[in-house]
Image 1 (tube, rainbow, N blue to C red):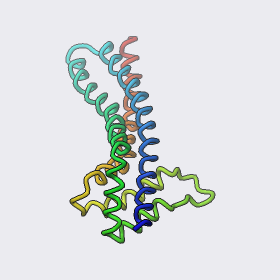
Image 2: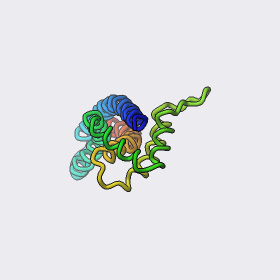
Image 3: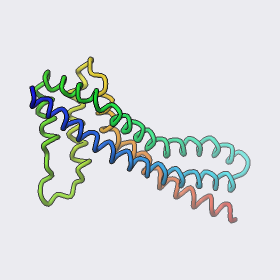
Image 4: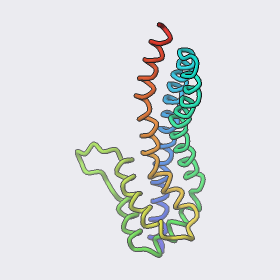
Length: 183
């Protein structure tokens, strides 16, 4: 039983550390992408006239909300992981006592060391493993905090990818709007 408690605490410490680092990164991405997208949005408002401006008011606002909102959602989800650490330990302990597959995945995740010479960041390695744990934990209906914590950790890369993927769109639109505004 003591080994299960220790494994649960170590797993939650790993998740909390990843959540803390991810929340900081998501905040920085939200600030950078948000500022850039708002500048391009305002440039579009200055450059366009008539019906094109009316379309841009709505379409541009949607793009800005998606670009800045995705990393903010990731940050909010990851921040909730750290707040729920106590109940996460209980959920992980419950899952470990019930499911041998979960115990194997948690042990692999917590005790995993990156092979020497690899350049994969720890976040990428752990994210893959937490996806496996999310699949195992998805069958348990009585766990309160664990499913949302695993959702936060496993969707984090996708939410940032959405935001970063919109950067070239805003860059190209910014160039077009700047040329239209100058001419």
